[in-house]
Every structure is written in C-alpha cells, then in structure tokens.
Image (tube, rainbow, N blue to C red):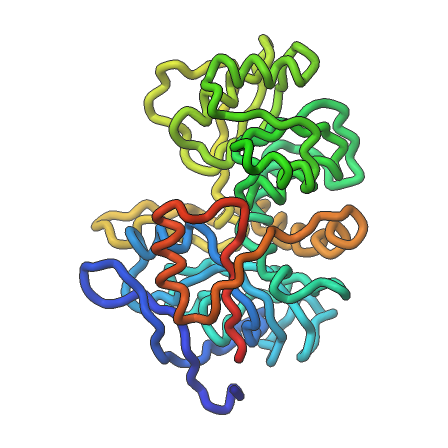
Length: 359
C-alpha cells in the first residue's frame, strides 16, 4: 500500500456506549514538526490497550501503542538527524486516546527522537515488543530509582514481582546489566522462563504473604531487599513484595496506583507509582470521558528521559543482551478485538501478543 492512497486500515474505538473497537478506514496521519511517518509492520499488545478501549477511549481514537516498521517520510525540523526514509525503527506512541496516534494501523507517526533504529539481526516482530513495557522498565530502574544506565554496578538484590509479565521480562535483564542480583516472584510454571531472562532466584507467590516474604528475605542473604518493582500492583502483590524487604525498609515501584487501603502495608517501604505516558512530553488525561477530567502536566525531565531510552536501547540489546518478550503472533489488525478479549479474560501468560500489520 502506498501513502498516495491517502487512507489506511486501523483499529478504531467505536461510536456508542458499548466501549468496543473495530477495523475501520481513516486518513493516513501527516507527520508534523519533528515527526516521522512509519509504515507499521508489526504492533504488540499491552494491558493498557484493552483497558483503554473498555473504559477510557473516546470514539474515533486509533488504538495501540507498540510498533515496528519502516520510515516512509519525514516531517519538518527533525531532531534526530540520523534518521532517513527506509530506516527500520520501533518504539511506542500514546495510543488509544487520539485520532491520529495509534499503532494498530497501517501507518503511525512519532517524534523522531522517540523511536530507535532496530539493530541488525533483530526481527521486526521482536522489535515491536520494545514499547510500553520496555520504557516502563527503564523509567523505573533508571529514572525513578535514580540509578545510572549500564554499566552501573548495584551490588545487591533487586526484587521483581510479576517477573513473567512483559514489564518483568524486560526488567530482569536490565537489572542484571545494572549489576543487581535478581529475585523473581511468579508462578512455578514460569520459573524456567524468568531464569532464562536473568532471574538469579525464584519465589512462588502462591505460598502467601508470610512464607513468600520470608523466602525472599532468606534468598537476599537474610536481611531482605531494599529496592524492587511490583509489575502486578494488585491483590496481595504489594504485601508480599513489602514482606521481602528488610527491617530498614526501602523503595518499591508499582505499575498501578498505590492501594488506597493501607491496612497491612508497611510505612517504611515507600510506594511509588510509575506513569510512563509522561515520557511523551504532552499534556494528557486518563479519564477523557468524565465531565471534569484530571490532566497530567508536561514534565520536561520525563520527556528528555524518553528520548534517552530510545538512544540507549540499541546498545542495551546488542551489548547487554536485553531481549524481546516471547511472542504469540496473532494475525493482522482484524485479530486485535479478540486479542483484547483474551487478555481481559486472563488468557495471556509469559508471552506478548503481536500482530502482523503489513501485508
């Protein structure tokens, strides 16, 4: 398909109150200042995609965040002057909220310093997994927890709850590259998987809060951990994670907002929620359908860090062995609504849904 057609197929939020999406035809977006237009080859799925469609997305929004593809045109005032038409790139956009931003489409646009060139030897299906989950892991381990990029040497244990999730599978090799020894909390059927991604120790969360916490502390040398990431942030995950911390407490990052009910939670373990959308440097709201939505402000340092992630990604892949999530190839754009339903039903474990968009 050529951009001369001026239209494309895309997964778009439907009109009406049923909060569903479908494949529709819409105009190809025009790249603005510092933007590149990308012919999407593959697009990956995240929980945020189906959740937006089910609860937040305005009608007409183009769905999807993660992508890989080929640059077809450059907008004016490109910041990343190394990019050219024909380059293979990947990354993520702030999808599911805007009519002209979304990766579940034959074309998408993104700012030139918020994409990375796909390293030689990496498949484009693999590259598409380096989106929301990857930048979230980087934001937590480097920016939020104030640790240098590799080769940092953090000589202590790092706890990752939900290590078999997409974020967890990126956090594991990144933590290893930063020098941490890693303790992965997940189900036993994922033990081999998380070990292959860099877990030094594994803990079964089914043991419950006290037993799992005691095992984490023992594996960390008896004194417990003082830093970690809870990629689930729901149910007992926060309590189990906190139970693995030592008597001096520490810092635990969460993917979702901290629990409102503080009963049973430790005050000496700081809980910090991560909102990766601030990396795009645009004002936005997570509740656009409410009468008076709250808008997240622009945070300049987060936008700069978003560009830093893209700058470091090729080296982290090529030199430090950060690898793609395991892939479940689901077909084309028409398969996306079913993928949303499957993820909502909990039918995803240890794999990333990826859609082949280009014909």
